[in-house]
Amino acid sequence: MDLEQQIAKIIKDEADKLIARYHEYHNRMHLEQIRNEKRLGNSASKKVIHVPDYWCHDKKFNPFYVRKRHKSIANSIAKNIENRTYQPNPPYLKTVAKSDGGERVVSIFQIPDAAISKLFFNRLLAKNRHRFSSFSYAYRNDRNVHFAIQDIAVDLALDERTFLAEFDFSDFFGSISHEYLFQQFDKNGFFISPEEKYVIKSFLSDRKVGIPQGTSISLFLANLTCWKFDHSLEKEGVKFSRYADDTVVWTPDYSKICNSFGLINEFSNDAGVKINASKSEGISLLTKEDFPSEISAKSSVDFLGYTLSVENVSIKEKSLQKIKKQLSYILYRNLIQPLKQSTLAGQKIPSNNRDISLLSAMMQCRRYIYGGLSKKQMKDYLSGRTKRIYFKGVMSFYPLVNDVEQLTKLDGWLLSILHRTIQLRAELLLQWGFNQYHSFPFNQSREQLLKSCAKERINGKALLEVPSFLLIHKALQKGLLEAGIEKVMNPESLNYDYSTV
Image (cartoon, rainbow, N blue to C red):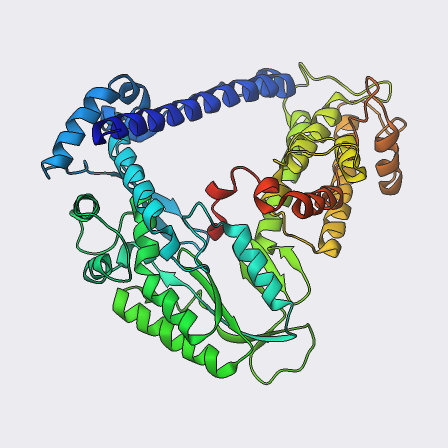
């Protein structure tokens, strides 16, 4: 396949992907509108379908336009690359809020340019993947975030006391020195053709420093920039995990951890990326809780949405709060919000021990946690009656969690918030003149609610059953043992931004 054919194919694929994403969004909004009308009646807001604002800047941001003309666009770009006249069109700059209160500028390139970036990223990665460190986990098809977490967890469990160096860079992508980056092209055994060098430099030609965040080729360049740094840590004999610019280093040897911090400073000066002092923990001692220590100590370390200790792998507190917030919202949206409207028109009032709003809430909670699985499917899988199930719920973003105590508390929290929400719903119904305290589920104590929801049958199915984080955890653990990480992790794990949670 010649260059023009390769470009035509990847432009078409990129346009098809964006079209499918837009149709999915459109269908999701339509279904949400139907649900809102059922819940809120005339109070439901009208459906509004948005298109990305940058579609208006140029037709080549619009996937429908690009899909129709992908062959002629590919012909033009191929000629420009061969003649060394190719130049990406100016990207649309979008500001994205960061979790720490700052902002990140993301470059959104026109679809043909984004496709070229992806094509050359794939070519460069295929030739050079083996050159990257085994401890570099981001932007690769042979490594992922869960491999990083597993490697850290296994190592930390080997020693009761481990020295850590944690640091973060300020605006890593935006501050990489071009001089330093270009020096890496001909060093360290990387295979980068003259054509690939030209395309890389064309994407960097509009800036004096840094690489654009939001385009595929920058992902390769980020790992290329860090190669020497990774290699220096390996030579020092310390273990580390680097996911883009998020890095943690560990070793039982205090002198080595001090040396590693010197290497971090050296890389910072050479590559032009500054260490973010406010987000960098520096050197500390990881040990079991309440163990004596002679320097600053901690019992756990947060990394990529997880919290790791000597004994456990847990969901990071910030990630845990996001999970709780989503479940709380599901319960509020179905059970409380409809009763806070100015009228109950269109509402189905609970009767005969049936509350259709509770049914909707529990099905949505289970879908969020289990990803479409039922308790029976997981029980069959755990007992061996079913050989394979597919994990897609929120817990499949955290398959390596083994903190049973945390998951048990999370189950308890879910039951408590469900019970409190049901009691609040009863109060609101009473304000509208409907006394439901005598009927299910409003007459149940917290302890009774769990058992009665499990026993209740609707069309012969346990559709009101309260989902359990502990149960999905057990199924994930079996899946890890039998099929491995890649078979149980959520299919969207590679696109999930763990660095922001």
